[in-house]
Image 1: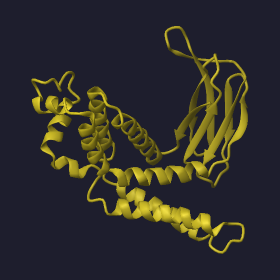
Image 2: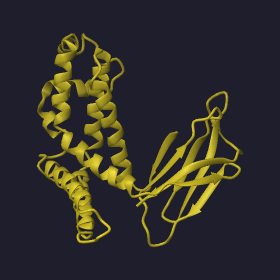
Image 3: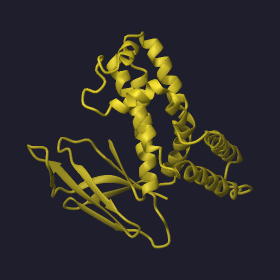
Image 4: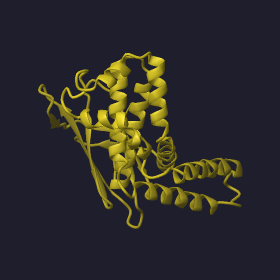
Length: 252
């Protein structure tokens, strides 16, 4: 099955982008090749760029606090497990505390590292990190994988509270949805959304088939639309007229 996610607002879009980058960073750090660690650094700088939004930290703290207040309202409900409730609220508390104690924006500590910032200033230039431009960086790349991994883990660790907060919030958001089997008749699917309820994320899970259909998703507060597309020989997406069943999840 292939999963596609569509955010309904800019806040969730930013969170998904950061989650994507943190996942990539985690996969690259554990590898050994200098080239993998080069792209790990590039990913680290991308995270700093995306997380530079002034209100990101405060927005995430508000969301963590909102979720905790909602869950506390379930205290005493006989149909709710107190043990599970305690576990989730503890995760929210830890994420809130860690993010709240983070000084400044995510990655702010790294901006004081002149060596890292010299790499950051050139990594977007084609060929800008050659050994004659950044000899100290070239020397670092020749170190053992263990030393490079330790450095990368230390730098990434300064942004761990942000990653933890995203993991908790996106996990709760995804868990709020109930998957439904639906069919795109003739490659088209539309569904109106109930008024008065705000959805934040749409998830489409499709079987991996030889047809390799790709969903083109659009949505707003009143309606969602999924149109099935197929790549032609040149890789351009064209509308597909096939009936296609898939799993749809709306997360509020």
